[in-house]
Every structure is written in C-alpha cells, then in structure tokens.
Length: 447
Image (tube, rainbow, N blue to C red; front, side, top):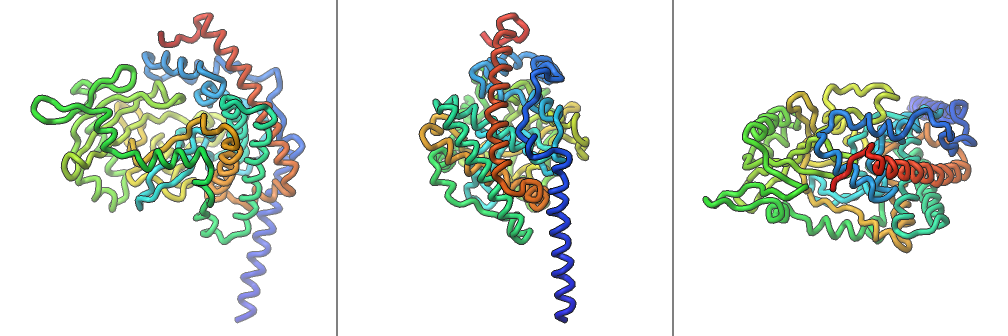
C-alpha cells in the first residue's frame, strides 16, 4: 500500500517539476530582460487607423458619443482603445503561456456585483474582450491602467510607479502561493482585506445600496392606465419601435436555452414588460445594447436584463480563434473560467445576425470612483488587482507554468513597472494624436 502511495507522490513530483520546467523554458521565447520592452517608435500599425477600423459594424449615430467620452483624458482614451494595445502587444514576442485573458484589464473594470447566493463580490467584471492568450498581456494592460488612472487622480509619476510595483509584487506572490496549493483550493482562493481598501469600500457601499427598485424609479414611468414603461432619457435611454421590441423579446427564447435548468426555472417566473436601448460604457459605445424590464412577484419585484452586443475580441485576429460561434457565449464561458462566482442569469442570444451577452443590468453593482484613488487608494487597489488577476489566471491556466517563468520575482516586478510607465506614455502620445485628429475632422464628436 505504501508503495502505491509513493508511486503516486513520485508521479505528482515529476509532473510538477515538468510544469515548472515548462514555464522556465518559455524564457527562450521571451527573456525576462526583454519582458518590459515597449513597442518601438516605428510601430507596425497606425493607432488611429486601428481605432477607425474597430468602428466598423457599430451604430454610426453613437460613434460621436464614444469619441467624445474617449477625448476626456488619456485614461478615458485607453479604456476605449483596446484594439490599439492588442495590436502593440501582438507585435512583440510573448511567453506563450496561455490563460483565459480578461482582455480589458484596467482598474475601472474592477467592481462589485451580486453573487448567485446573494453575497457581494469584488472582482474583474467586464469580459467583452476575453479570449485565451498570453498571461502577461492582462498584466501589462493593468499596469498601464494603474499609471494612467493614478495620473488622473493627481498622483506623481513616482507614486504611480510605486503602485505598479505593488501590483506586480501582489500578482507574483499570489501566483507563487496558488501554484503550491491544491488545485481546487486555489480555484476558490479568497481575497482578504478587500473592504479595507478605500476605493473598494466606497464601491461596496454603493453596491449594498443598489437595488432594482432604484432603476425602476430612474428609468421608467407610469402610463395613464397604471402600467409602467421605459421613459426616454436624452442620450442615455430610449424606447424601441414595436418591431425592434418584438425582435428583442423573441431573442429571449434562445437566451433561455443557454441557461442551466435550475436557472431556467427561476427565469420562467418573470414576464416581459418593456424594452429600451441604453448607452453604456466607453469602449462599448456604438454597440447595440438593449434593456428588458421584466416583472416577477408584483410591482416591487422588477428584473432588468441587459442584452449587450458582442463582437470579436480585439485580440482574436492575433491568436487562435474562439471556439464559440456566438460572441456572447465566448464571453460567458470566459467569465466562468476567470470568476469563481458569476451572475445568476448569465447567458447569450442573437438578434438579426448579431451576437449578444445577456446578464442582469443591476445585480448590486458598485463601480470605482477615480477620486477615491487619491492618497493611498491607488496602491491599496493595485495590491488587490494583482491578487484578483493572479487568481483568474491560476483558475484558467497553470500557475506552475507562470511561476516557472517568473522565477525570482524581482526582475519581473521591475519589468512590469517599466512597461506600465512606458506604455502610459505611449497612450498619452496616442491621445494627443487623437485630439489633433478630432480637430482635423477625422473623428466626429458630439456637440
């Protein structure tokens, strides 16, 4: 009996060594000394041309609003220009260690939401760009976002660099920890001290207060017969024609089939009341985004479903194509790989040949306010961001591979900090070029 146990342990030992060695060997593809190297000044792509190409297929009338929001600051531009960074990342060597990428890892894509069991969670919460890809692409995007968000919240360059180092150290430390834990323990890894960070505490309080009844007051009105419907809010929300409304409602049949059986049972208690078009986000502006108001146990039990158009991930043309024919399904499956707990009603559908993600519009969501990053807020958030990103990568990839590549973390931490600061400068340059292009009429903004 003891001999069998020894064989199992020995086999496990070899497997672990092989996986660690496999990560170490990836240094031949991208040496750690070159990990923080930026795209050359002679970039292979024109960033503004990439941005224009990404606008194809979007609702033309909304592109002015998208560009207006992106023109607010370098960080706002960064949020709306994933395709530019995807092209830059793909133009350079990478480790080839594959995880499920969030794809748009930045500080304002961290937030609170309600888990299926009613608990509040804080995690990555936007997966429109998710796809299988090199782990460091998420890390580098988050690092650049920390610098840009830090500068916008009045931090010095030195303070931003320190926050990125804290993020990188947190990521590397968490990867090392999770690589040593039992697989299922690592997959359920709990992040402690979350609510002690000022920016997260504020988002948490917002999420605790957020209720579907609040949306009912904000977005609906009573008709003369006592019924309710969406009201028109200039530039934000408007009701649909009866034809478009019917198409959205018909799509709920395919969405229902995407849900697990136990969640179909819950969904079937609700009935549709009205449908509207809603403008959301920065990067998502221009895509079709519908909201369906549904009623459950009376008027005090509203359900708001968001039906959000999903196109190809900005990274897909540089990586192996998604195995899913529906972009909404790509997002759902990627989100489940990264998050331990996801929206109870997460699913997908299609309308008029377009793919859509379906989720609750407000399941106790709370977002980060950049003003709360002042003082030590940036650094405290950076530490949590590193831990969350590492957990997502360990759940969807192999922490031992990443650990084998990282080795002694000091070199990688400095490389990540170098890349974050350098790419923030690249983005600032692109932002100024974007502003000039707006002035020259190449990009139209809202009046």
